[in-house]
Length: 597
Figure 1 (spheres, rainbow, N blue to C red):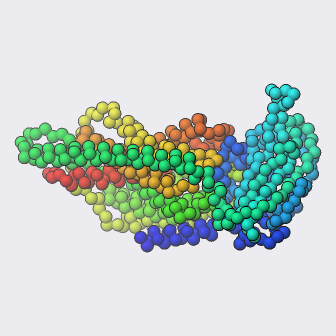
Figure 2 (cartoon, rainbow, N blue to C red; figure 1 turned 90 degrees about the vertical axis):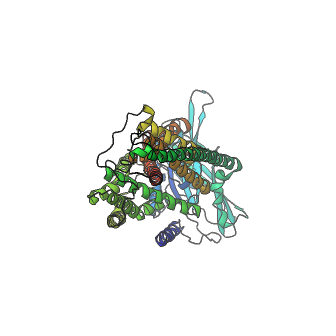
Figure 3 (cartoon, rainbow, N blue to C red; figure 1 turned 30 degrees about the vertical axis):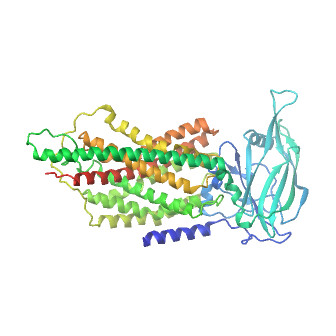
């Protein structure tokens, strides 16, 4: 427990120091003081990604479009998590000093060339928005609008907004809220490819409010906590709980009755004649604990699944204590990188220890396999998607320095902890606990009907856990890949617990039916059945992309399906580990309860 406590404290300290700091660190200002304002990015409204931390896969640097440049352009230094978020903050062309009102202040006058007009028109056509930060408060606005031509309704006119109205709320010496609205009547016609004279302006209005500074971020999370949304969330919880109660009650009743009858039957069989026909799970006791094929891969999968399970738990701990408040830029990505690196020892220890229990000898290869089992596909996916982002010049493309930092973390933290955990696991004196002896030669498995094959069993095993979470899954997708903000982490944690319980119970039930059919190769089957929910989630990705989202384009499509494939693969490994552990506990229990010769 001391290790877990230390890790939790270290993570909390890391994220407390990771919060965005403005130039005025105490966020207190006097009249006419300069308040930091930064322009972040622009991008199409219908290709969002992870607005809870402002990350969009198809977003571009603010000055990729020909906006007015400030007199002194400077970039704001970004932390690791902020760069992973896709943030590229630069000084904005506006000057919004504290409590200083302005009326139609001119930013600049410029002549847009044909190419610049084309760039702006393309942005307006795709419904581009801009995103900025003022005293660490995010705000957005649209670049322009598309309207039908009054003379010819079949034609469209493209307009660029040139006048922005800033409305800033303050409480004494603190900035509380900022809103940016474009003047719909102050526009520039971009319909034709010709040079255009434009005068960019802005207006600033200050209003006093009683909202305390500590509550200024609450407005960003109100959408997910509105009554009708909470009702749907709780309906999801109740639906999942009913599913769990019915499933567990059904399985408990059936299994207890069946097992009780089995125990009575096998007790009578011991007193009956020796020529009694042997059927049922008791009579494969000499094979049920026979080590699985590809035991190095199996142990590596268990190790990776255990690490991802620990990662999920620590993420939930940080979420429940309030680290991931809305627009704490980079906190989640920093958490994922840091915690994954620090928990690699769990993967090494679990994999090497179990591999040692399975009498494996090549523990070095096992460790290499454990380290690459999840990181390998993730790295290949990242390389491809980062290349796509570079080709599109999007902010999702990581700078070379950031990639070097991640490689150093993997080299100096992840790999050494993986090796140390593997050495500890290899030297552990734990032995595989099998309540019955394994025979020298494997028993032949009788022919099984099609519905007892691996794929149909996986379909049955994945459907019930997926049905328990699919309502909440929509809100998660709408947050990660849409414009909603998800902050009800307590409900999400309950759903996660329900997912684990249902996965464990359905895997146990299917393992029993498999053993009752005298199929003793349950090791890999239990892992695959437990992890099959990840396949269902990826199937939901297809439905969400084509039916519930407006995403389009090669870049957004590749980012969505690429990174969701990695996430679903992670769920497969984690839930597969949970399913196998539950099945192993059950199998050990039932074979301890009978007398086997």
